[in-house]
View (cartoon, one colour):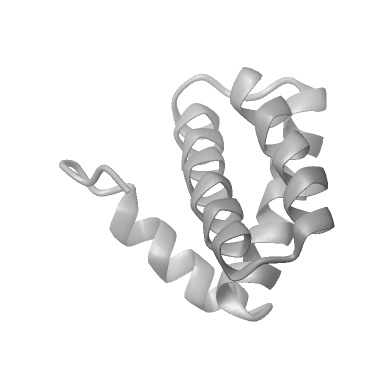
Length: 87
């Protein structure tokens, strides 16, 4: 939950700056938050409010990191949810 709130704050601050470094930082935070959402959804389930937040993270990540291509995001997720991956 804290990570998700942090990601939301980064959207606002990075969006205002619009720098390439800010974009990379935002994408890195989104990836981390999205993988956290996926892991929790698979292991413990998510309450409705968290599902909404995770869906927003998914959409933003898909657009910013994968050009809107859900298949690329899915493949990246599968690779990074594998045991031993720390992305």
